[in-house]
Length: 463
Image 1 (tube, rainbow, N blue to C red):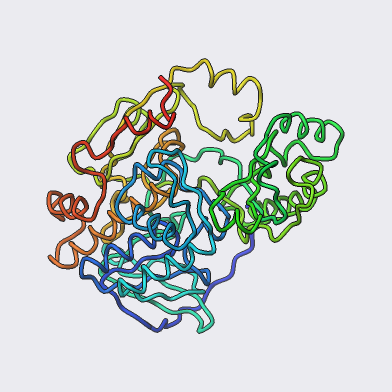
Image 2 (tube, one colour):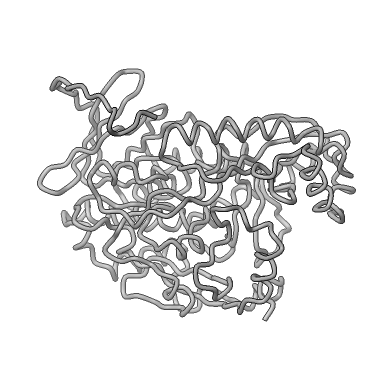
């Protein structure tokens, strides 16, 4: 990267950019939040165009092999529908009882499920296309500039939803952002075959084996966790003796610095390759072979907008609700100031971190997430959906999972459709009608929608 004081500049020549499409609702990004936003907007009568940089939908599921929906049981709506379709297609366990902490799924089957959802809803999709700029008029987003094989083009819309995963549209629109924090570690999962599931589930001594390999210099300390897990064990992966290994992570890399993100990708892929000989020394993995590393490194956090409302640790730990809530969320984590599950220094695997966690007071709550978290301050016609909504650093650590992103997206798409239908701004949408629609669509917003007793049955709560 060139130092700031050495930076050269060029003057770009003004150019006319062709407008290639218009939509009532334009969704930028086809990950979990983007798919939910597009489907919800289309189901509520809007003409929807979704732009996606990849060739398939799903975001971190199929692209980063994050193949478990954490606390998905406590999110309704489109998230629940996706799980039901995965189960019907063999991509998730149909016998997994409600209340389990995670729902593992097959990312390949997920691709088909999401494509079907989008097609059935009538969403138009433009893949292999990058959003490069926001079109601003009088403080409102009127569309975006994109780049693809056809060159530089413009797409206009009445409402734009930023589901890019990094708040790219909001950033280019000049939206204010939360204070920068050192990012949580990036992770590189990888798919393997040759798993003996009967023996691989015995994890005794696994941590000691990893630590011994680190001490011997076989595994690098800053690239690997002190343990590893076989992630996302769905029926189809188990039948194929496959698995997704979680154990490679890279510290101290900035997700929106191009050089650092590239370095993280390269270092993590080297880590995957070096891990395989060690993995074959672990019981149950003696015949394991590498199928492929994830197409994209997993980024846990990035920019977060400064919205009309910022969700904080107090909202979560005190179980607060708000007049404009768009979904409710179950939570159980320690009441420890500054706690994040994956600290930027990688200390989550240390004895000190585990002791601190074991001695912490655990808090169980149900809290509400308001629509204001999706609205960047000072900008009209723009909603943000996904892990980049307006949350404090600690709140983000507790409310950024894929089910959360889908709930953000469903609310954003529904609100956008109402704004287009009624010819009003997003801030003028009738919140009562929005909430009623979300409840009718299965979102867990009604009183008593989340039954914590079911979590207790399955040992999610150990009070």
